[in-house]
Length: 420
Image (cartoon, rainbow, N blue to C red; front, side, top):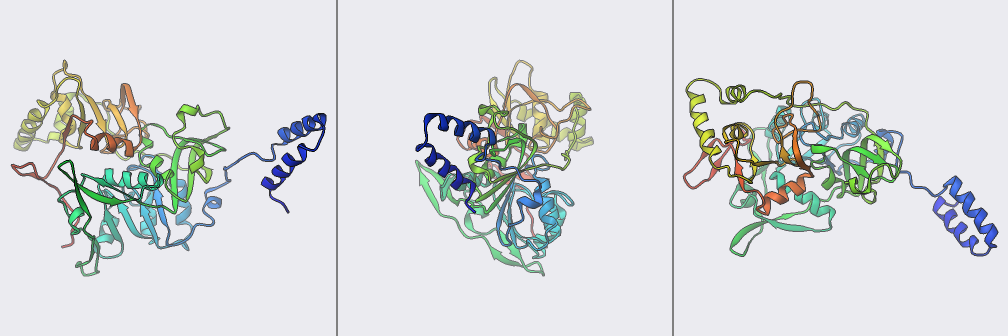
């Protein structure tokens, strides 16, 4: 039986041989039945992944619990025959949710991620040799996904120069006795205009699971606030991109200027059926309450306050600043009201506002610490790849980070996953 595309071509060819009146009638008939319309909407997640193969590379959007394609992940968990996956995501989910489900079911053999600190199950699997881990700086991970989708095989970045990521001393996998089984490979280094850069290869996905706020039958997708995160870069990358949307609408109902992921990248669309969760609900408090909560008490609180007060002196009017989680987030509380600073959050917000009032939390509005936040008037939201592009290009005037230790030269030391 001929395909619908063949039928359309034959109809077009036959129209040239008919009278004007017949062509009018034919056009009316074809227009009313719409035999050739594009409809990428499938009835279920199970239908969308029915041909998914083992030993594939799976890209999963999301940041913490925000913008995670849980409906699709849950469907994969229910198909235990899909195994050996290489999963690429900012983080490895949490126990019982997101990619944490596929880790527990042993369907993932390797993770590419930037952060795994809140999944103790995954941490234990990595340190005992049950799974391989390629830790990648968050901005580099976003750019590796973006580059793969743009047909760029590799690029140079200043991130990770001089670290174990560059030198090839990062453990990829462990033996069951805790000894290192395999280390990462050293990366190529070049100097451009006197500055050292590391070469990173693009990531090529077989499948991408994307969470959208709205999607239409053509596959056009729209994200909401910080739920954009990695979803756009990953959705543009894979051979097969599946969008799960909270709202499926007709073509034209999404303003063309609001299409964040054009349908050309999307294979299919399914209805999202899972509830959105919030990892860390933080509500608005007085400056005194905020300080007491993060600074602690006693002598330690006094030392921490001195550090934060000194850091706050670095703010100047009109600056764009990026703040790390923990004590750095308190710095604005010590800034004079006459100084206006625009805060940037690397998960895709410029114009970060205060914590929300109780009852006004939004699961699509979180900061880099996965805490609930609000937006200031004039704020902008975007994907993680653009966010780190701002940082990498030097558009951010000031960054305040927390660290375990810092040397007189400014070298930072923080915690790392190591086997005992």
